[in-house]
Image (tube, rainbow, N blue to C red):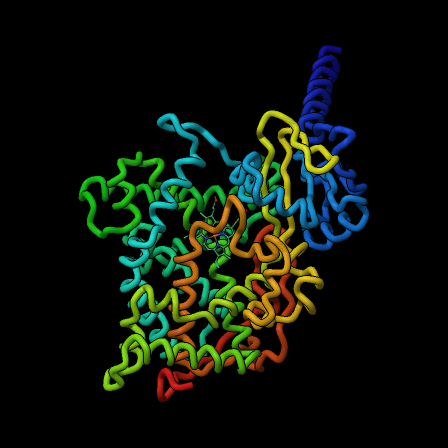
Length: 496
Ligand code: HEM
């Protein structure tokens, strides 16, 4: 009797717990009736599943079913409003009320906006980042950037066939370049630590799943791996920060800069993480796509080689000096002014290969109104970059990689306001744009001057046509099947 009573009570307790857990996991706030049209697919745990797996298909279908082009859906329990069209894009990128960091918390994992020393973390990061990435710091970094780029490429050129995929190799080069300005130099100077950091940041980007993002406290395999590697990396960066506290500034790098500003240890660690993530999320893959396009478009490759030769002849005319040494002597201004062709090639790669959404959140405490529709408080707001970058009226034949779109004669990106948002726009232009462009110019100028190259599959057969961009589900991904690269050092570096 007693045992069945106990069993009954335990069963009841389990049922109560299960009801509570289901309620907690499945409850979600309703949309007000004048919010944009709610999409029909909204499953109880994940919301609109296609949002997680093939975001552009989801956006384009939902836009087509809505009379205003805007729509509402759930991502887990989170309310989300998707926007489209010219007015919505302008409102989105120029809004002072939408919060950027909180917007991305849905993809990057939970984020707080805690106040330290009387200021919000977002404000702190924005100010520091702007200072760190200003012109004189970039100028100071340039010689090291050139030295490391050249060294990495020379090492790579010694191998006939590299086991690493094209995207892994280029990601590594760009990681090293980006770390030069945003990370402690202890990382770059220690090959073992560098490898660990590269592995961590690339797996941090790749190890995401809807379950992890929506239920971060569930001990899923993704959550455990991500927590483990984040914690280990945190400890490594903390050790560097602790040591630097003892030695005082030594390298003139980002960490020294933060120490000079009197930043707390925790904020120094935060900055290193935030900047490496912001800097790496895009740069590595775009540079790898650019190498791929140069291989498939020899006419553009030739133009770029000509541009490098012209820039070198102009800045360092003495032809008795070896070409690569002359290229190494270019000043910041020579780089900024001398590479308009690489600039539009990169711009076009970003247009065609960026397959994600810009994200914000309304945390104003009140509803926001766009046209006749309402975006309730505590709601994510998203704008898909392809809405404008793949608009055939702006960019005819939008799937074709064609940098001439941006030449003055065509000026396709000038047809509408914010018609190109690959470097951000309005209130949040990319804070790292000058450095990101510089590291790409340096890498590509040296690469095309030093090597003849071939992009191929694992069996060595050459790539024949441009591979599709993998759908951006949660993060940018390398193409599948993977691509590799064969390089042959050029007999006459710098020849066209
Ligand atoms: C090819 C490389 C890159 C591309 C295509 C790119 C693109 C972008 C875009 C589109 C945004 C705006 C996001 C939004 O509106 O939601 C942005 C913001 C940002 N980027 Fe970049 N980025 C690149 C490289 C970098 C690098 C190397 C750094 C730092 C070293 C960096 C730092 C930032 C920061 C801090 C923001 C946030 C600005 C803010 O909060 O207002 N980016 N970037």
